[in-house]
Length: 448
Ligand SMILES: [Zn+2]
Image (cartoon, rainbow, N blue to C red):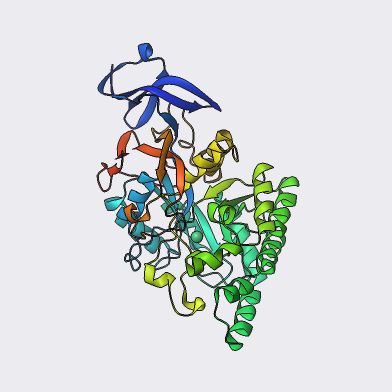
């Protein structure tokens, strides 16, 4: 037998250990992992020269934009950023133009993506206007639903507890997770109104509006309303001790609840707004040092399931509006996440085992991506190859993303993604994109 390719001299992360091995790939799948002498003949051989091979990383929180927001990012630039950052699968959020919240909008988005993507992409949907359509949206392949609680985006009335509970019951029957942005709209809007009336429009005003209570209230409400429904809630970007504790307590009862934190909320605190200004405006916002410590503690204790980048690219001008209320929230993150995480591993702030769990294994589990997230025979040949020793300086001007700025610009990091294999094919190699537009797969729920 002759397989498509064999990668030799790998140091591969297998079941928590780093093993010297070779990897044979056939038709996009891992055919065999073993000694070089055990490898079948191959059309192509690549010597990995003792580089570290991780399971292809999965970012479960990415805004790829395109369509009406293509000036910020499109499927090609966003997935180029993913490949360059070592991510082989990303999950796309639905707050697009148009909002992904119907079979039609999902289908159009998938078709457009299929022509452009360089890595695998799965799609979230917001709630449709008619709850029954959630069934068709899942049949079409959405990997989960996303619910924004801070503002009305989809078709579900977020002010109505009963409507929320009906929706949660429905999603529970569809066996997909429901990712939630937990900020309480009523409290947030009333905070904003007061501050606007007092003519406050500094970054401090934004921080006050998006208070800790805004998050805590939404987390409490979501946990309470969902309690009898059986829905799997996945809390995006948790930022407070109160929020995280409520989630941890609920987990202890055995309910299906998971959560994500972002590196921004772990590596910066509200104090950094003084230096970075509106660049660091995000929602939920950066918190006090105490809260950051609590997040780290939650991460160390295992309450956190995923580390999303919340890659949220905007035009630079949108980050520098004259009033903070007009500043677009969020930052690009796909090209900085892995180097920053590897640097934290180097500093013993995080174990490699935990990093792989947060960036690959758990996201695959949460979203039912059963053929991804681990290096095992038979799984998709999604591989993230890194040079664990390589030091470099983050240079945002070189990003593949359209958003060429970052608060991490100029940071010294150690650990660089050097090759990214997507479904067995090289998508990114030593600084350059080598994959063809459309070579990534649209990842559909239940049909990987
Ligand atoms: Zn987001």
